[in-house]
Amino acid sequence: MKALVFGYSAGIGKAIYDTCRKNKFDVVGIGLEDGVDINNEEQRKQVVLASKDCDVVFIVPAGRQNRFSQCDMLGELFNEYQYH
Image 1: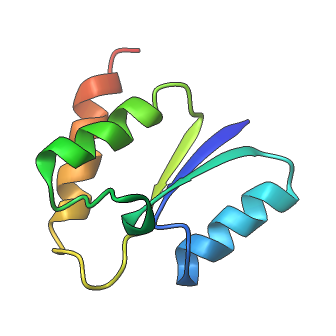
Image 2 (image 1 turned 60 degrees about the vertical axis):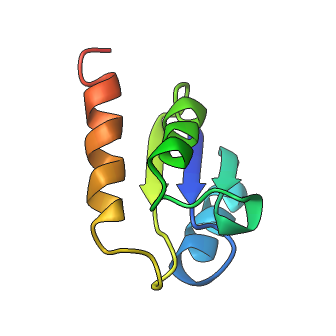
Image 3 (image 1 turned 90 degrees about the horizontal axis):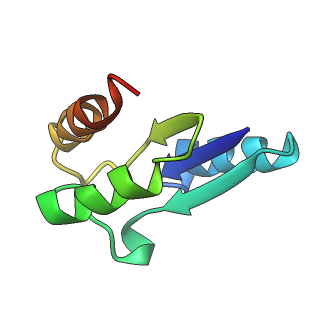
């Protein structure tokens, strides 16, 4: 199983990332430390593209993110993959 964790470097996101690795998932981490900010629409597209072959996607950004960015990201993921 392949997972993508946005916000993988600390807190809940790191716990999810580490648990996925421990359970032998093929896991990809993306976040601010990689230069990807989900407040930026163009950068959210990178996350959508990176998730294309993932079975599960976790969106766990840092608390300093715009609280609506998570909703925007989920909407864009849904719009891209709802019929696949």
